[in-house]
Length: 393
Image 1: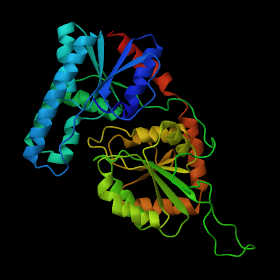
Image 2: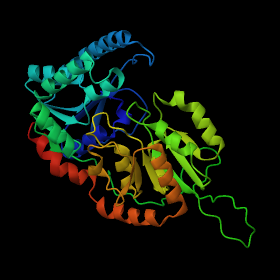
Image 3: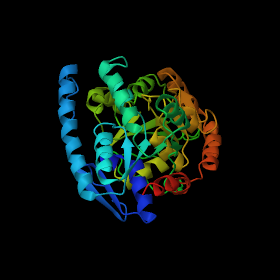
Image 4: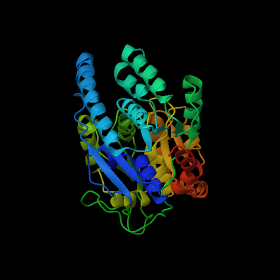
C-alpha cells in the first residue's frame, strides 16, 4: 500500500515470483510510470491525500482514520475479486493492509506472509511522540495483526530478534541485494541539470606550468525526502565545507523538499550542490555509476531497518558515507571497510573534506565493496524467500 514505482523491494518480489512460475498481481497506489515486470499484472488504487503537514493532532487523526477506512474497504474488495491463494504484504503500513489482508485471507482460505520493512508505529511516533496513546495502540495492533500471518520475512537480523522478543514472531532475514551486478563507468551520466559534467575538474589559480587541478569529488545522495531522512544534517555539513572541489547530487522528491528549498538555492549558487529531482530508472543508475561516493541520511525510526539506497550504491561498486543511527546499520556497512559512518554534521563535513583531499581511502573501500557484494537479489531471494512463499501457496 505504497506507490508502486517507489517500492523497489516489492517490485523485486513480484519479478522473482513471476519468473518462478507464480501468477502475480501487484497492488499499490497510482503514481509515476514504471516498467512493469514481465508476467505481473498491476491493480492500482487511489491512495488519496495525506493530512496536511501543519494539521493538529486531532485533525490528523480524523483525516487518517477516514482515509484508512476507505482504503481498507477498497483493498478488501480487490482481494476478494482476485481470490489469491497467498498474499504477500509489505509492512508498514500496518493499517489498513494487515486488516484487509488477514480478513480477506480468512474468508477465502488463503495464507498471508508479511515482509517487515520497518514498524508503522515507530514512524507514527516521529509525528506524535513515542508515548502518545495512539502510538501505543498502533504498536499493539501491529504485532497482534502480524501474528495472524503464516510466514514472515524481514530486512535485518536486528529486526528478526526484535520481532521474536516483542511479538513472538519468527521471521527469515532477506537482505536487500543488488538486482544485478552492474559495473561503473558506463557512459556519460544523463538526466542531470543543464551544464552538469561529472568529469569536470576544479578551477586552478596556478599557471599552466603549475600543479594540475584536482578532479571534482562526485557524491550522490539518493533521497526519499521523508521524515526518517535527515537531509538537514547533510545541508548543515555542506554549509561548513571548505573549498575542496566537490559536487553533491541529490535525487528524488518528497514531502520535506519544499521547506528546504531556500537552503538548496544557496548551496547551488556556491556550486557545491546539484538537484536532479526524480530521475527515470536508467538515468538514476547512470548517475550512481559515475559517482565516487554515495551518501545515506536515513535515520531509522525503529533502528531496525536498512536503507535501500545503500544497496543501490553498493550494487554499482560505490562506497557509502552513512548516518550512524545505531541498531542495524552495522549489518549493512562496516565502518572503514565498505563505507564510513558519521553521527553529526561536523563528522560528515570532516569526512567529505578528508576524502576530497585524499582519494586513496576511497579506492581501498571501493575494492572491498566489490569483493563483498557479489550475491544478487535473485540468488538471495531463491535461497531465502522462495521456500517461504512456495510453502504457503
